[in-house]
Image 1 (tube, helix red, strand yellow):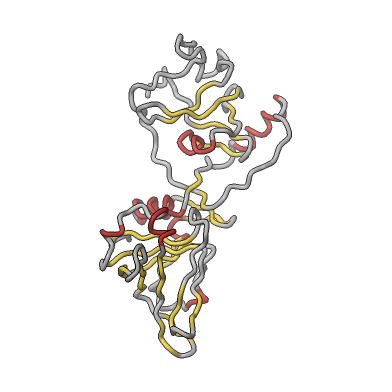
Image 2 (cartoon, rainbow, N blue to C red):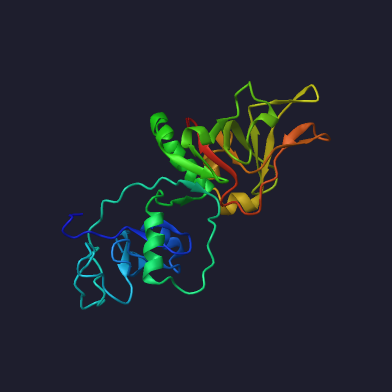
Length: 280
């Protein structure tokens, strides 16, 4: 997109107190967004070509703002032409988990808004990601890129490289892994259960519990298989896969002499993901 016809793709969100890209802001477009240049109200929008942008809400951008556009007959709000695809950068999630929202009564006055926007400009643009999105980003990055891209989990900011731990590291026992603060990944095989929509993830790594080497087996029920996993399970059955675990610590089951995992009810930001090998 030429600088002669710039499109506003990043704006300030009052509720998260951060700058956000239109692509992710579109998911919570009822929040309050402002143009970072002239501070008018804007709202996330998406064209039929899947271009994401912020359009002016109620009034036009200031005439001195680089995003000012003359009103059109169709909208009267200076909506940019969105018929052609816009070359928008790939968004790598830099935040895993629920975003803390700031409760506010009313909207800030112009002076307060200017202070809020100036402060937010010193922080990276907020890109929230689900566990699936974060795992997909990690899988698509090269090792040097993983060291350059950062991810915040539970308030701790690390590189993507540092945010993932290999479960096959023999120097680490069960208690050495940061199951809640990092994403633990390693090799496994997926098998189909006897009941419909039930599967088992059998990790290759074994752990020593009470002097005995025990397996780590994870049962996946319909809640997981029907609503979360992006990939088709038929492609995974009896195949070598990479399993990604976050926010669910394995627990030893003495009756079955194995480690098991209970997945959380909210599977957006914690739980389990599967990918075909190799995912390294």
